[in-house]
Image 1 (cartoon, rainbow, N blue to C red):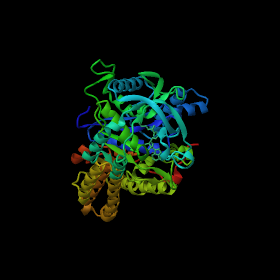
Image 2: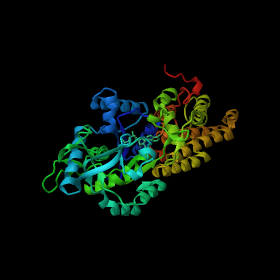
Image 3: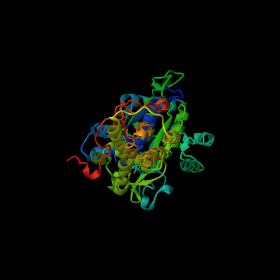
Image 4: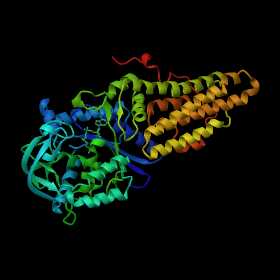
Length: 518
Ligand code: MSP
């Protein structure tokens, strides 16, 4: 499980307070495409997602809706699960932080930290932003004591609390980041974290008094306090990995570790707004618990509406499910992954969405349609047995470029490499003009070669793009006589000769002809 060929991939766990929007969908689709890619490359994968269910935000949202917190969480967990189903997300495990297994892991780890003197009690005075669940010092605040991140009013709080000695790990963390240049990608985000770590790192407040917040995991050593939601949430990755087995002995208070387990994660995928928690709080907590660090953290950019971040509270969100109902989930997945350069921001506009859709219809759909109809018309639907032509070399280059891009997390480039191949395929059709070849019996061998090359290219395209568009690419592979898109390592010995091509509906129908559901 923790071997070289195994990949443990995670999304953040989403707050159980609001419906998923395209920001959440992006993180999840990105992780899904990688999970599918690694599975297709023959690797064992654990793909984890879930919901973040404790904390002030959930407590307040539940109260506002007249629900018990757990009722709100049950509803929202179902909402996220339904959304991921509609977007064809192939997660292996959906974790909820209210699960008994997770609660036990958090308590066991805190017990260890307490027993080893890494947690202490002190009086705390700070400004708190409920929306971001973050504390700030007075000097961090914006005008009129507002949260520097979201601009909402922060509240001043003074109370006893428990603190984790995070400051003690600063040097070790900086060394880790410096010695592992790809630990945080992209580099611009890594530099930001290194910049942040040039200031002295403070200790982390890890508790909230029950009098103010009851909806959380009680500290194992003081029932008057619950665990700070970020500490609780980050440990979800460890819970799902199976490495922490609660109930330690005197030698190992709190827990012992299981072998083998999925830990450490190969990759945490997060948005740039939650990088500090993942690249500073999380690794220092792991160091204190004597657990290995995740292998890599990818921080992606934001989906913007105009120039501002899309978020529920701003009322400017795009509903990925409405888009999927109208244009199909594969089109939404393709748009998200092709349009956003991994790591940078992107702006959603209906025009850009339609132009990406047209790319699918006019380039890929069109090539599939032309190739299938010509094989049906000229060869009775059987793919001829013929050697590959010059397009075959181009195909192999595309496969190599695609693999490279996927391995380096440049999914937009991987999608582009595939789409460029489809474009080359259309150029090849024009150049070869099979309709002319078909009129001249002495050129039957050339026609065979052309049709076989096109069929092979389309099956390769199905194999490359099935991580992005699983449903449509299965349909495409079936159209050319396969049960499913072949795996990447099967492409070298791929044989299309004699396969039966089927008639079928247009892969990507024109948007004005797609009827949306009532
Ligand atoms: N619950 C925490 C994460 C805990 S992980 C241990 C959280 N949840 S969230 O629901 O607010 O956000 C989850 C993810 O969605 C984050 O990675 C965030 O970056 C992403 N997005 C939320 N809005 C976004 C955009 N507008 N664009 C892209 N992604 C953004 O934070």
